[in-house]
Structures are given as structure tokens and as C-alpha cells.
Length: 399
View (cartoon, rainbow, N blue to C red):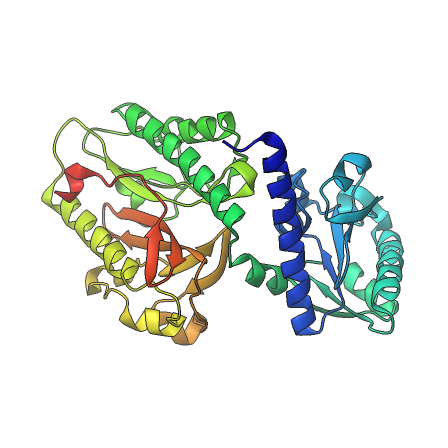
């Protein structure tokens, strides 16, 4: 076991590594200054993690990242302890220009905020007046920066592309989050019985996550019986009955802000699954296993799509939106489109070692009564991938 001091040093070094990776990407793209509002990007770049859900809808905390040196966080309190993160040179007051914070003074506060931003840019980037921003409140934020002579560039992809490759500490955090999710999945499986509602069953995953140091769950994707088809119906007060299929997607943000994204489909006993249920499950499982075998460093996203499992015609209309997506502090780059959707939403890229990915599978007929959702979370390693998710598949449906 590592000593507490060693763990703290390891975490500090990981935060600094994240910041350096972001700054390296900025340098490659010729970006001298980066302003982050997205709370997940802020957490990645400096380690600050307060009030993330609140900041998603009422952004009032932001981070200034110069291409060299420590970052500057704008937040309302806790200055001394935040400096101990090791990634910050200062913590300053934030100028918020949301409706909640500024009311009818939004335009005035936006101009004040823009003056502060321009001052940072000039101090740290000299004559370079460009600023990359991951998210900005329109229209006043954009207009106010333009009035200060600041040229705005897209900044979200800077951090997201960096986040795609995981450090050793990132991977340890992810496996801890998966262990929490899997404990919650066991609790749900143990409590699945006729008469329980979807909401009640889903609550067990939340309770385990919070009890074990997790943070939140991004969706409410649990459904049963006829509500599984089409997918993306969130849980309700529907009472689960004997013989129902119950499908879910954890979308769980666990300890350290890492996402555990695992999908399973259960069978509610007593009784035995029907041949139709087993057929759906068999196809969903076959798709997962086929596509897992394709993952390896160096394969292009387009090549993966071309080689992916062929969906039988009866299930095409209700196909899942993508084959594979990146995972880290939430769903991340890349997203691999089906070959049939490539011309509309597809983009190319390369799968690289130390990426973490989720392999998706949903099988359900259009206007069908049931469906099956499965998903595995993996690490890309030399020559292939290592499955990180350990929750077993449902033997009653598979064999």
C-alpha cells in the first residue's frame, strides 16, 4: 500500500502532467492563451472540481491557461487551499455575466469580464491577441472580447483531444470508478424482483456511487419491458414484472471524476427467457465481441466502421447512434459512426494506445416490444484492447 504522502504527490504530479499536455497542444496549434469554462475541462487542466453540475448551467468559474507557466483560476473563495493543487499561480475573483449573477447588468458585466480577459492575454501572450475558448455565453461575451481586440478561436477540442490519451494515474482512477459501478450493478441485480419500480431499482446505483466516493450519474437510462424499445427512455415509475428484460447504461461519474460507462440487460425472474429475448441478446453480444476484436492501435476510425459487425436489416432503424466512443471524465473523443452514417456524421482519425473506449451495442426492432443494450469499456493496448469492465453478462439470456 502506498503512503498517503506518496499518493498525494502522485496526484499532484498527474495534475501537472495534464496541464503540461494541454499547453503542449496549445503550442502545436499556435495558441498563446486558453480560457476554460467547461467544469470538466477545468478539472482536467488544473484539478479544481467544485460545483461541477452547477457550473454546467450557470458558468461563473473559469480558468486562464497560458501556453507556459501556471494557470489562473477565477473562483469566489478557498484561495489558499486551491493553490496547493500545484497547477495555479493565483486564485482571483470571478466576474460572472450570467442572468443569475448579473440580471439586467449582463452587458455591463460582460464588458468588465472582457477587460480582465484582455489584460491576461496581453500580460501572458504579448502581441498575440488570439484567445481559444471552450465555451462562451453569447452574444455579450463574444462582442465584449471583440471590442477589446481579442480574436476568438475554438478551444474545446484542445483539451478534449489531450484527454483522449490516459496517464497511468488516470487509468487507476478509471478502474476505481468501474469497481464502484460494478458494486452498484451487483446491488441492482440483487434487488431486481417483480414489483420493484424502475426508479427504485436505479436508486441502488446512485446510493452505492455516493457511499463509495463517487460524484453523480449523467443520465437516468434504465428501462424495462416494452420501454426498452426504442432506447434512450429514462427510468420511470413503471413496475417491473416477471419475465421482463431490464436494460441500463451506468453513465456513472465515480471517484476522481472518472466515468464508468457500462451497459447490461437483466432478466427478471421467476421464469425463463423467451426465444425472442435470447435471440435479441445473442445478436447484441455478438456485435460487442466482433467489434472488440477490431480494436488495436493504428486502425483508423473509417477502417473500423468498414470492418464492424453488420447489423441485420430488421434492427437497422433502431441502431445505436455510434459504434464506439471515447471515455474518460465523461463521453469523449472519438466517436465512430456506422459506415451507413459516415457521409452524414462520420470523421476519420486513429485509435491510439492508452485511449479508453466504450463499445456500444443495442438490438431492437423498429416498433418492436423489447430490446437489449450492452456496452463494454476497454483500454487500447499494444496489439489490441483490454476489457476494463468486469460485470458478467446474463447467463440466462446468453446460454
